[in-house]
Length: 264
Image (cartoon, rainbow, N blue to C red; front, side, top):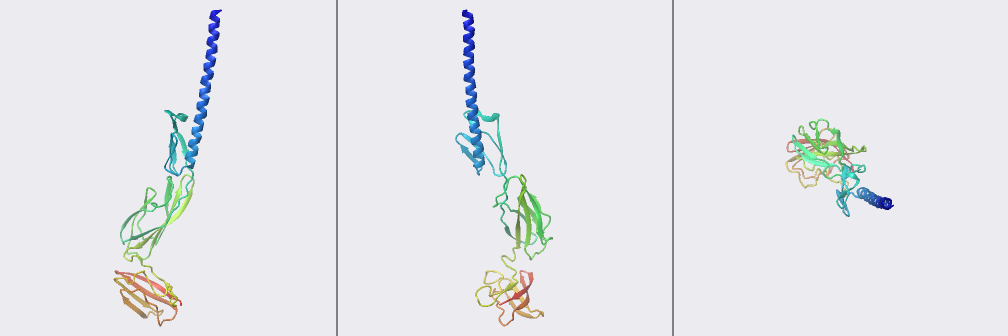
């Protein structure tokens, strides 16, 4: 009888011990679930490269897969790592402007000040004029490498497209290249010398003079009606009627040849 009692007592104790272990496991699982949810919320709401929730450290990067873990005490939850993928990022691009010399080799990061996805691909859409550059290579889907061909006079426009590969969100932008010899010179095609204080003078730059320049203006019959060396940006076409004229502006040996409309 005494031996039977011992067996019953042992069985009772084992049942109680099992219940304690079960309660501990359920409690731990509940806490782990809360930590996992907190981790998810933190990753979703965080837009920075690093965030911290209590003792749980989370690493994230916009537009890139995130591999992180949640740690409480000295245990890692979910038997390893938490894998989260960030939401789609639509590229936000700004046009770039570059002054360069004829024949120069160019390497420029056109995304340095833009908001871009980590998993991205860049493609060239168009180059205008078509033969203004050598073949363009793209480095790290960010840097354009190419050579400028010839003594280019017109602006060169390189249009490119950037896409987030995870969701096919794409944006176009462009790089505008101007000849450094001409500086900020604008090849004017019209002005309105009517005395209202706006666009009254034939101007190519904001400077009072274009050093090393020569300007010739011709009427529609090819007769020279104006000439000036080191042009001073202030011809007002006094004595000449409205209409279409032509000019040749030479700077450091390079020439612009354009039509010019005068409309008062």
